Length: 362
Length: 197
Ligand SMILES: [Zn+2]
Image 1: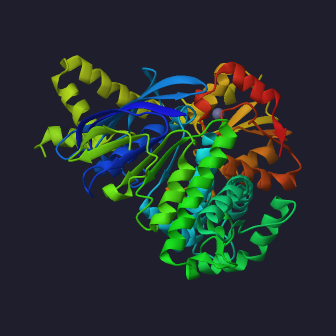
Image 2: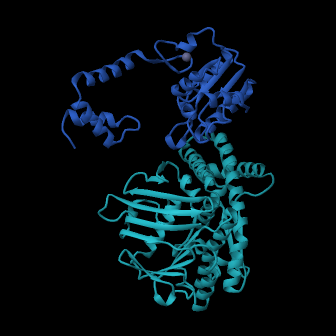
């Protein structure tokens, strides 16, 4: 899959940027604040209608502008699609695919697929379990865009059940709790199975990347809050066993909102023991593993966007990563320093003050 | 922001569901600028509706008197009840002409996030009707979304001891959606394929 060209208008610090994106390894170089991360963010936004950095639209719109615009053309085995997004400072995006308005995110995500790595990904390895659940859900959506509904349905079920427990003032259990239990089991099992499948798909690739890059093993394993066969029965039993605690704590203590992704380096917990470089490598390899899993699922590689992947790696590992990125379809990498530009770049862009200049190959 | 009657009108309009402050402002200025009889017709329609429309004491649907048209119709089977969230859902199903029985309007769906619990719905009235009218089947046609499903599960559990057949209208309906967007063919298929709860 390839992004042919992209156009940004009033998107973050880009007033009017248009760039043709070649296949292969593209490197955007420029000092921090020049707008290279914003450019990569726009590329991901075009494919997924979400920013990898912020949950709100407002920061995406250039200061003083009423709306930002991103448009571009994506070519895949299924053909070419023109995607156009108008991003108002407040309110819903207006999205067109091939000049026809679309309402749902999945109408875009079915056509364009991108995987994004950024420095914030270090939190996936070193942060709270919630960061790893978010990674699992991003993986789920990247692999199967239609399954996003499983995430939203479960999330709303938990919030409904928690509110019921919080607002309950009487003795025993509130009326309707059993109905929400049943919903929790149904939606929770669906999400557990989907996350397990996503983890199973990406883990071997992530482990392989890490072994190649670092020289020793990474173990990546989905740790579900509820396990057992049949899953529905196990979930129901756990829920009943913890019901007293749920009523005392007034919150839901069992379910995939308490899942984790176990990451271990050299048989030790990566979060507690990994050096900064190890953690960074693990975070990067998780995204590269996801990209490989998506490639397997789609039959063609997704667009890979790596924002500043080299800064925490030593020079030898930088070269190793860059070499592994060759031949993986379209990969756009940003670096802050000229000296980090890989030798095998197919095209180099210089980004300064929200403008892009093409410099040619290295 | 404005003074006197125009602000009062904006305030009243913005209380309506789905109307934000901006829309309220637009509507208010539209009405003020409109020909006098246009605004008057709207005001009268609201007052008349409020005076003449009641809720059926049997099923909770909208009615012009004590009982709605369907509950007054003796040819409608009393022993089959189709349970819906709102009067508009009963109207949607009625347009598809797939139910020979009668309706029961709950008045919403259970949703703790919106502060709606079972006690806010016409659930007891449903249990009373089932017992009194010798109901043999209750078709749960709450919306095919999270809250509609939870409501159906809750009602089904309450009906279980009565031994009445409880079915759920679901198959073929767009999951996560609203009943009112389903067409007649989809609705009749959903009824055909209804499953036991
Ligand atoms: Zn009636």
